[in-house]
Length: 181
Ligand code: NI
Image (cartoon, rainbow, N blue to C red; front, side, top):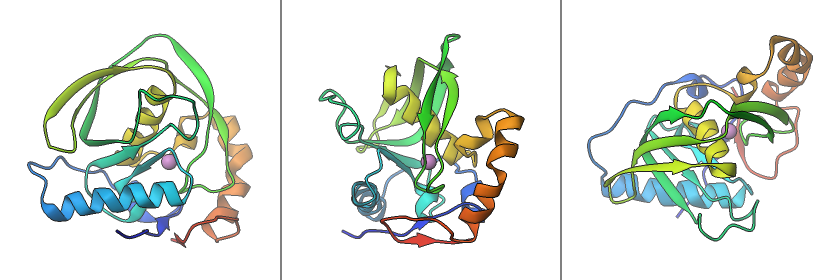
């Protein structure tokens, strides 16, 4: 087990798109364990592989720290693909381990259907709502090279631009080890 450093905006790895894999190796399983350990250490509720410098199409989620929710325990998503989105949208405040000290309200579909492979590489198709739907969309965006703040209005993004410049220079507080661009 290892705690991995988290890559921070504006590192090029966070703009990489992950491509699907056809199997999981013991090394990949070990990497997934490291991702969970890294996420828990940083008090995150989701973590995508490129946030720890990997190009694998994998993210991990555990929202039990954020919500009193026992039906969604630690879960890994491999080759995730959101195959349907509800028309109904809602705003919720998001943050990101790769964009420390920045939070904002993002408008997203409230319900989604996701196709993915689980930790045993078995295909699953599941519907999600609430915080799980939110986190899955945020993490799937990471695997497509998209930051949550890119979902904000251009006015909002302009207001955040000086803060983003500070972040990429390492001018932020984080309780975990980071890799600057
Ligand atoms: Ni994030």
